[in-house]
Length: 144
Image 1 (cartoon, rainbow, N blue to C red):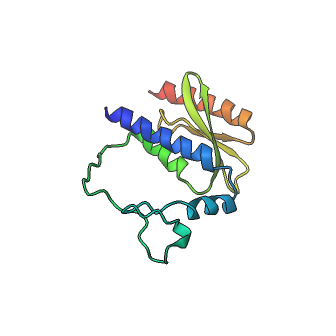
Image 2 (spheres, rainbow, N blue to C red; image 1 turned 60 degrees about the vertical axis):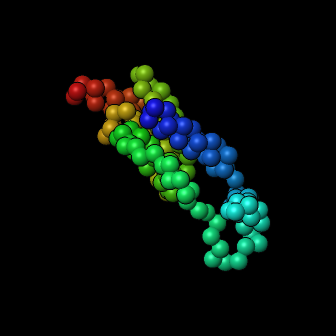
Image 3 (cartoon, one colour; image 1 turned 45 degrees about the horizontal axis):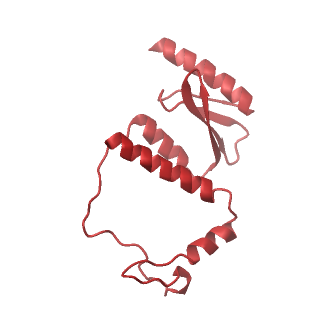
């Protein structure tokens, strides 16, 4: 059950990234400012609310779910929420899913294998990063 909830969480993040990551700042601000407040059936757009108005509220029921993140999930979240990440691409090599990540100001493409925590490499191109992470995965598996 917990695994399903975490997977749903990642699917929601992926949907948000797909929907908003390529939009210009002007488009994002327009979207946010035109969003309804939604508290106590107040449907005024956020752009018309006085400064300091509460726009989010916690549910009274507090039906939150506590869960522990695996190292793999923690790594994924830290990459997804890193403000210096320009783009992320998921690739499979040697039956292992890994992430190619391009950071602002970095000429290299980083490669992370979340299921093998600490297995990281990089390359100047996607192809080189894939070759290097493949080698890193083989070396990582030899160590185990």
